[in-house]
Image (cartoon, rainbow, N blue to C red):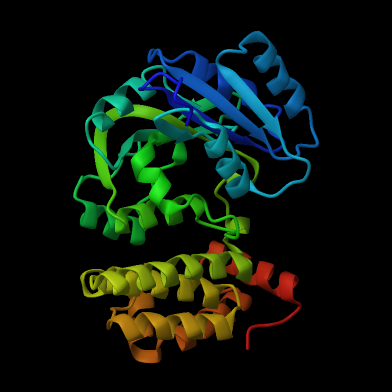
Length: 349
């Protein structure tokens, strides 16, 4: 961080890859902040559309507030965020994806709760932007941030599927830097990984109830049945995150405090492995969860929980998939079974 930067400067790091349709709105939302000390640092991750032209226009019009770097080959969001953090001059960092936006008072609210709290990660409420029937972007109901500022409770919440999008998170430098940055090897859950590592290393949560971030649902981010088919490398990334947390907590002598939450997380990934036909991997991950703590059945339905208790998770999933291929089970389950069959060329064993 430059010594000439204002002491309370916020650097908003914007990783961008092929976001020509959205990056202008993202940068406008940064420039419209009521908080006075803010810079945007955009890292274009070798976009092949017109993103760079849009970004260069903002740099030309706002040279004191927008800086940009274009990398020569696509290396993923983790790399772009790390490069942006290296270039950033601010005492505070936000990682704002190039298709998301922040509300005009977002940075003022987040800095307000983080100031004077060394090692804090500030979080606020968020909402999704979904494409309406008429082509307009519609804001959904608010998603509250973590209900507790307690560090251990926040870690348990993140492990058990609590999630705050990056557009609703502000990092103090002294919370971010001990993590060593974003894991560029992960194919999934990069933001959860760095946040949970920070919490294990001693970062705290500072909470504002203000609506600060709007997370845009489109393309690959849109929730749909077809996205339920998950490739093995993405699930392996989630396991990499959990394995590292186990090692860190074990070294601190605090693993028993989080064994139940970690066990549930391993079970959840194992379930996705079985659902997507990654049987050997799912079996391995289920074993890791059971080694940590005995966990209850994790199915979302009473019938599923009963089947798990009687048959075990793997046999229950094999039965469910067999029934799905025969036209029984929910529409989502039937679709997932078909996707698996087309992707692997196999039928359920």
